[in-house]
Structure formats: structure tokens, C-alpha cells
Length: 121
Ligand SMILES: [Zn+2]
Ligand SMILES: [Zn+2]
Image: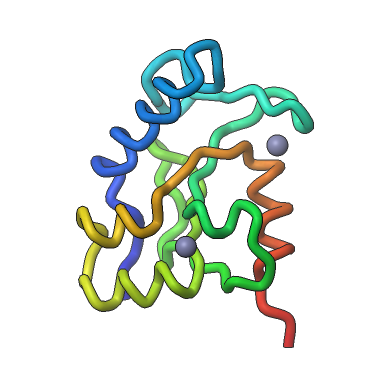
């Protein structure tokens, strides 16, 4: 099983978000104490999801097997389709990461996205 997202790939994606929103959510580079300001949840730690999950419903919700590390305490998740690409590729690489198109959201939003995308039996 793939344990976690390749963070070295996430970094450029984050800078991309930065570039699109100059006065937006990530002004400085990410470290373990980083927070972002959510219009609904206030100052929160960022979390990372694939773009499909953002507005999706019951798309499946995959998280790393290992818990977040102390020096990188961020949550991340991806949907069924991303998981299929990930399994084909065997790792987070340009293709799987490109398909996931990872975005940063706050941990409060992450919980909501999780509840919405977990498949109901
Ligand atoms: Zn996805
Ligand atoms: Zn939020």
C-alpha cells in the first residue's frame, strides 16, 4: 500500500495556489506550524485533498495508512479515481499527482469533505 503523498510534489502545487491568490491563503512557505485562514473556520492548519473531493459527494475517501508525522502534521486525502491512478503508477509521481491536482483546504473543511465523500453503505 502507498502510505502517504509525496510532499515534495505537493510543495509546487501549493506555490501554485499562492500564485493564483496573491493575497490569499499561503503567504509563506509551509512548515509544521503553518496555518491558513478559512472564511468559515478561521485560522486552521492546512490539509491537502485531491481536487475531485472538494465539491464531490461519495467519491471515496483515501488517507495515508500512516498517521501524520510530527514534523509534517498535515492531513491528506484523495478519491477513488485518484487511488486507481495511484495504484497503476505505484507511487505519487507526475501523473498521479497531476491527476489528483492537490489543493490545500483548512482542517475544518477537510472534516466536512471527509463526511461528504465517505461512501455510505
Ligand atoms: Zn481525486
Ligand atoms: Zn474551513
